[in-house]
Each structure stands twice: as structure tokens, then as C-alpha cells.
Image (cartoon, rainbow, N blue to C red; front, side):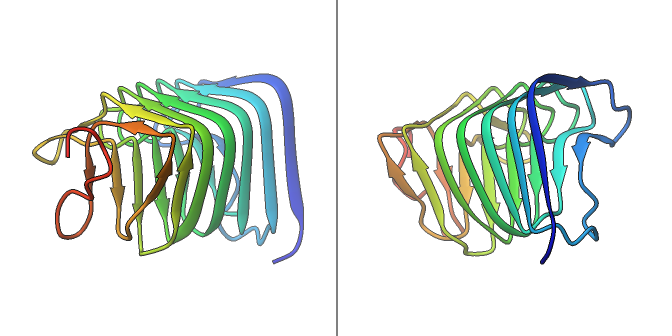
Length: 172
């Protein structure tokens, strides 16, 4: 993968109608690394929809979006001081990526705080995932991961894996 993109705030991105993302990088763009920092993304379809090989977020807030706060489907997702809240679906939907988030907050999203599938690594450090409601499931769900997640100094209420709760959150 070649190329890169950097978005540096402070900035506020809102108003992308329908399913459009406030920040969207075409999945066929073949970008290598995308860095987004000091940006608030709200009131869009998806907050951030990204197709780069590597997404690095620093001081990013994605809230009140109709669908997902962050939607990322390949490569690796890294972040520091990232907040997703009050989104209509997932705080973060990460499919086929490795995830490492420090000081990540996912609160009151209508689906899952962090929805991570395809048996790639999940590491959360100094994070808080609470009050997320899995509307298509059986109740609250803060963390879904296909592989056992590693949590360091992280607070969450409910986790789930393919065979049931992981036993890493207080309500498991």
C-alpha cells in the first residue's frame, strides 16, 4: 500500500447526510496510513469511514452519528484519547483489523462500544466502555471480539465472544 493522508485539527466535521461519512477515505484509494488528530466528527451517517491500511487517531471524538462512530475494515487501528458516544450503531466497528486503543471511551452507543471481529488482536489500555446497548442482541454489550481481548486498566460492563462472555468486564 502506498500513499498517506493526514488530517490535523482543531476541526469539526458534521452534516454528511444519509449513510455518508463525515470523513470518508475511499476503500479502493490504496492509501497506506491515515492520521487524524484533534477532530470532532458528529451528526453524519458514519463518523469516520476509512479504507486505508493503517488508521491512527489522536484526540478524536465521534458522536451522535446515525450509524457507526468509526467504521474501519482492513489493516490496523491505533488510537490515543478517542471517544465514541451516542452513535446510532457501534462506537467502533472494526472488521479484519488489529486494534490498539489507549484512553478509548465508548459510552451510550445504540449497539456495541467496540465491535471487533475476525480473530485479530484487541488491546485496550486505560479505557472505558460502558452503557452501550446491543439492540439486536439480548441487552447491553460494550465489547465484542472474535479473539480474547487484552484489557489493561480498562473498565467495561459486558463483553462477548463467539462462545459467550469473555469474563473481562464487570458484568460478565
